[in-house]
Length: 81
Image 1 (cartoon, rainbow, N blue to C red):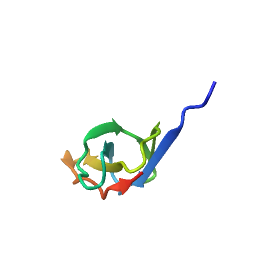
Image 2 (cartoon, rainbow, N blue to C red):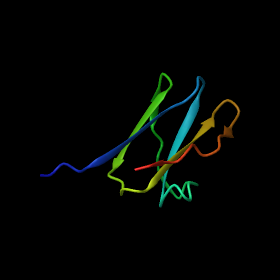
Image 3 (cartoon, rainbow, N blue to C red):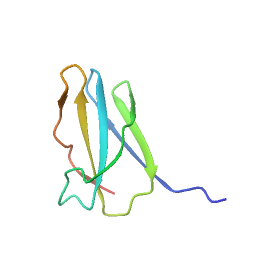
């Protein structure tokens, strides 16, 4: 049985209680969260999410929801796969 290829996405978050949401986009030319990928677990200011392999050239963005204030950040800078 072949092991499925994956893409690992990671980032950092400031101190506090946040929920991170990660999205994939057709490209970084239009970086506003087209398809939800998941909510990674975070620990000590870092987070990691593994998803099935993404197509080269797609863009990945994330938002952070501050659970203390219920404010959502803007989309992160887009990173191409």
